[in-house]
Image (tube, rainbow, N blue to C red; front, side, top):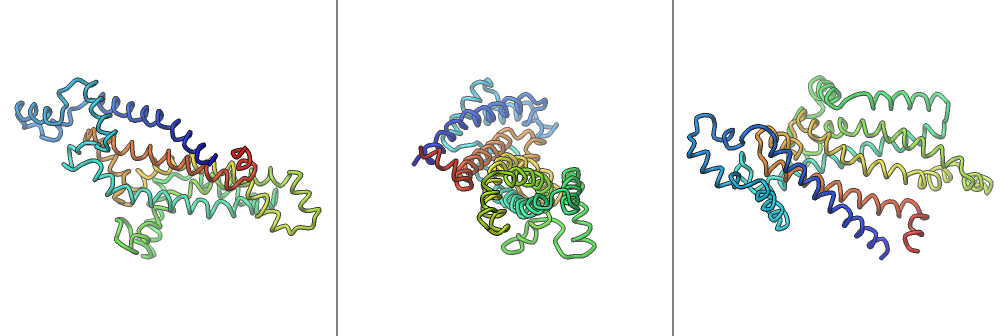
Length: 315
């Protein structure tokens, strides 16, 4: 019950943040030069056609009234209609969102699967060649941008070796093969960052008194490292994971463009270039809601990873 109350309070705290994000995006997209109606109809459209379509979409109303209407629509799960695609924004996001979510989750899984063993290995071999090698590899991973790594992976594994598809999404099990290269591209930078975080956190935990007590009791080094030290070391790492998930969603825009994945990142980029107001606002709202949900899950993971946090929340 205390955990649920804590999560509920965090949800209430994030509602003003979502409102602020939606409001800023609404104002910025309307301040961008250019008329979406003219862009949609073309330069040869008559003034009557432009005026009629602008009235149909409500763009002739004052900005304050458009803003009020948009918030009222969001409250009723109505995000409006896409100017360019002539479909409801909610339907378009529902079609594209699973691709971006799958890509982000796969990249996060790859980052954790690479970073946790590498960080622990580096910390348990401090100042040895294993530690130095891991440090160099993680530094290269941090310095290598996604837009450079993606084409290299395509060149090697798709064109040269022919092991994986170049682009697209596929269906069914084929989607998993299409997801490998984009997930590795997006997750490599996260893996490099988390490796350094895990190493630092593990070094701090391995110097704690309870670790020395465990060794004095004769526990095996594997039990000490993985059952005791790693569990406590994961708390600050989980904080970074929750924050970095938003970066994965942002990085998905570039990665989806490189690999032609039909995700919400490419949809947002297309909506911005077409001045598709409702679609841009809907995509940003979906990303914001995802970020809020991930932070709530991170809070829950705190209590699972660290008994001290769980005990303090129950008192």
